[in-house]
Figure (spheres, rainbow, N blue to C red):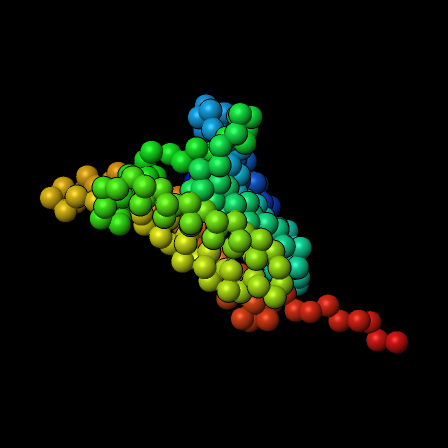
Amino acid sequence: LFAVACFLPLRFHYPLLVIFSIASLNLAWISWTDWTSSGRGVGQFLGHAAQFFTPMLLCFVIRLNAKQGWTKGIDGFARRCLAFTLFSHGLFAYGYTSYIWILHHQTPSQLIKIVQIGLGTEELTTAAGFLRTMGIIDFVAAVCVLIPWTRIPALIYVAAWGLVAALARPWVYFDPADAIDSLNRWAPEFLIRTPFFLLPLLLLWIWRKGIPAPTKKPSA
């Protein structure tokens, strides 16, 4: 239902608002229950911010209608979603641990395995060192996304990072001998992560078009 709604014309104003609001709340609830049952830190929840807030961004655009479109407020909200996502993934990549459970972000063994396969190494220290370095870069990029004069290069990195993150599981676990089963299993893993790279690409495109336009001072 939510996927079909994306193709409805904007004249269906209120139905779209309702559908996208429910979609955002549904994705947020799924992320919340996944976090609370995982025993991991809060990054497990905030790492999905770009996913569950994307329908909400569409709501904002529809609500503000075509006269205002993509405002600076929506732009800032979108960049904060990306910053939360990137910083949270950085916590797991870095392997930030704490006695306080909400701050405990031990690197998942599955993530280490994916990196080992991707790098073609069996060395645990090599994979862990690579992830630790990427975690630090993620922290820096998360901050740079929010700074006006560094946001463009930061978003180029985020788009590349998001594409790699979305493709990682299908690429590593794809079995050419059983292509249909592999696609059925891993294609959804790619699709649910598409906001990781589509949202920064959208922001880059919008800024290239000069949107949002700079605020003009009222004439005297």
